[in-house]
Image (cartoon, rainbow over all chains, first blue to last red; front, side, top):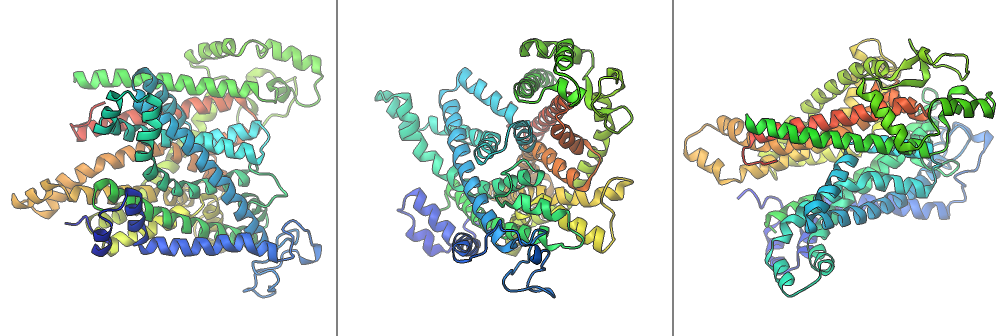
Length: 304
Length: 325
């Protein structure tokens, strides 16, 4: 059968008795993409959190004499500033690394928040059904019909952008997807034997939802939320780029690239180098996410 | 026929509800935040008394639900109001109380000027998306686990990792500024839409590549495909009449959900390429706090989203009779 495509038969055989989470993990680990993504990710994140501590270069320190230094591989570049410097003489490598720290912390917080909120709405709507379901789902539809970015821009332009408000706005704009997915899985799960059994035994609705259904359906959805970390990093960067994300002097990818755009013709590296950095980070997260998604699809299909 | 009628009646009623909900949210949001519209219209030189008087005249001190009902009343007559900032015939108006309100651009005119340009851009972007996603997705789905599948996976991982605003800047730098192949800043003819459309297509295609390859691979596993081979149907016929038809529904649904993302992508890309469409209008309106324009845009874009999703669901039900709505 074409289903058992790329996982080695040996892993499938050893995994038969394991829990769904463990089977999914094995199926994920057996994919080359996942390993490539993980190594790249650890490398980038390790550098991002360690190098700024070791280096004595301050990401916000201005240095008039060192303005517009090109990257090291161009004529005039120096090893002290491997990616060159910007219009104010700040080191682009350290700024990108600190930008990466900020982007990661913000996007992880956003994903955790919107997962928690979306999954709660989806569970309640799917389990209770009836008018609660109708109201919650119409709200979800309404929210889905405003492009995330328009909503975020409106809210952040009219209020003052702080790290917390950026996190809240992105989470507010992203939860409906989780509500929809969780609801559809809950609808199917509600009809299973064990749920009916628990109902007959007199378990409360809250207990059935949170202690029985949630542990069964949420892990596969949570795994795929990894992909949203990458999506939220892009959104955070877009907000910074338009000028309504986290405000300078804190370095973020968006603000660095927006600054560099003004000097694009004469100093192209200011906008492009940090963007390349962001691209590599997103690629590593997306490779891991794609592998997890495939493993989940196989888990749902019952081929692992 | 009865099905179609009840379907559209019910979905349109729900759609109107959604549009009302969205527009009220935006309306209320814009009124509780700091930034007095009367102050924006009159400019920083006006005295507080004049601002207060104008605000009363415009009804801005009434309760929000009352203001909203009044707005809806005008909307029912086809009047979306006038821009706070933009003058009729382009250009922006400085603050100043001498200008009569009639000289300001009507929101509906602004939308009517910009929407066709954006539709052109979105149409071109969808063509590019299809050109990228169809071959990769179909090949990946038909040869699941082999190199076309891997190619589709890596290509979509790379595309989805390219931040749209960064890609737009890099393309504007390399293709337009350095090489001079395709013009891209502003708009004079359709050539100016190529690079922006390409950026949107790169952003949109990964989802379609994945959805196509997954649903085609799933469909190929169904017994009816083997049965069709036994029945002696040619591979081409099996693919076009059976596999593609079944795989089309998830992809179509994805398209409906993605309309919002398409609008979001258009917005960023138009902003970067200075493409005078609906997205640029939106960004300008929000940054200038041009409330009537923001409200009009929210209502129109939500309506577009709702109508397209109704059509998507209707077509899905036509393709696959098992679907109920």
